[in-house]
Length: 475
Image (cartoon, rainbow, N blue to C red; front, side, top):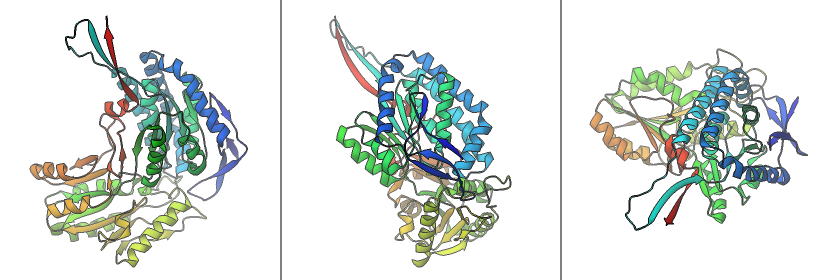
């Protein structure tokens, strides 16, 4: 069983305590990682702080070239990284390879976008004076990432941070640290100086808390639950520190009567159940016009019931396991509570036994769920879809907005005017109309309400890692 230490100042560092990593497909331990305590967290932050002056003074074209080199390294190690992701997350190999490749593409985008950071010099006409408005790197960044997409969420943070001249300490989820550690090694091999990109491993309660409570990071970028995000925001208020929070979602899809729903059905199933429903902008709640509701529900249930559940190593698997037993227990409890409150299980709704172990839940469709039920106020992180009819689109939009979350929404209608009116009313950071695809690198991604603060991706996301400075120059 291999042991993995933290990555600090360009080398592995072991702590005194260790935790086992468990394969979600089997429930068996396969490796162990260091549980970073106060001394290792301090060493990682100090490494980032000491490397900051030289890194921010590195020419932008050199930083960009290094990001391109890291992107190329991911592509040349895609099978290795996919294997790590599949083993630690529990996702099928094809999906794991897609995550690695999309991470590579995002780093390439950030490498180019970081070259376009500019300032301004307004023509104000003051005698013998110029006003310079410049952007500079915010400083040391702490990046805390989740278990569901450990590589792609990491690159959405390190790409802009390293590109604009920040240094970084990453803290991956305790269940999925291996792809992060390997990426840090690849970054060193690609030529990034020691101390620019550090990794500490351990739990959020201990290692994550030590990192968040450290005074040196000037920005915390976090992807994870709303509850933890609120805690990070509260802790950061102590230093009036910037935060980027990409938090939970409860994302609606509104299907109007004129939508070509049969053609859309494969997209709807994929966006609801890929990664076993473990991602923030998955469709959770489908609101369907009553005229098409019965036919849609029947065909949706049939499609969901056909999904093949199995271990990540099986090439026939469409839905792998949930990542760890705690999330399996929580999801099972949410479905059971909804049923007690009056919801109906159309398919699934139970824990599955696959092989000799693992954390499997049957892909599930619930109906009869009302706005007052607990499952409508909580993020549902698993393979569960809630389907309900509506009689008019105005009430559907009101119901879609009746949640504390506002990450993403989906709308399907042939009426373009109605689509734009509804998009204006939907309280979500991203709205997809008449098609579903992965969010683009060129477009900002983030949430409204309790789904987060700030944006990732695009030039807006890159600028989040900078501070504006105004210089008054008299001569």
